[in-house]
Length: 243
Image 1 (spheres, rainbow, N blue to C red):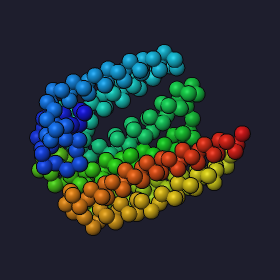
Image 2 (cartoon, helix red, strand yellow):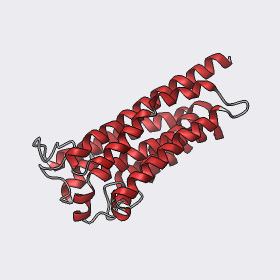
Image 3 (cartoon, helix red, strand yellow):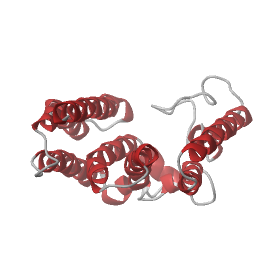
Image 4 (cartoon, rainbow, N blue to C red):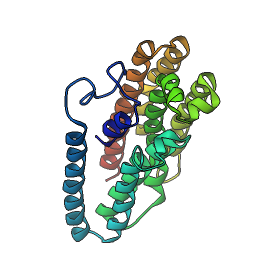
């Protein structure tokens, strides 16, 4: 919602924009209503967060404040993170690593290197959804003054970066699968999703216009979902057969 509001206010989104919610520019909602809804959801999240803190640790409050600040500053504030080369990094780190580690800590009361290592491919895959969006929107973003990674290095290098990071994502899982005491061949289930990043990269190379790149973006989202689902199943099976 903040993204919808601030991109509209900065003139980045209009009725011709592809791949956005369109609540303001196409569906008639007032910008202030969208902003107010975003604030309302933040208040609800904060209340739930305070309850979680009371049930686990008040250290969660500090992390939660930082996360909520980044959520707002991603598109809000005088220097939006999404307008810099670090959008993918922030998206992947906070929506991957931080969420996984904070969840692990809430349930166990301590931190561990295993979920941190497991969060790497998850973080990468989330960041690549962001990069896919930036590849699609690179022309309009550049005209608006954005300095994303895609704009700085160009489409071809950005797609190559995506391919390399997807490879690293699978490499990390393969490494974990064979770690002594913690490894599990069940983790190899994620390889069933390997065709999707290949398909996404190929489609990004072939397409150029936003509408042509939408199918490639769709595949990155499908891959993130399938990869996560297979990883969850693998971890569950690992736990069951280890008992």
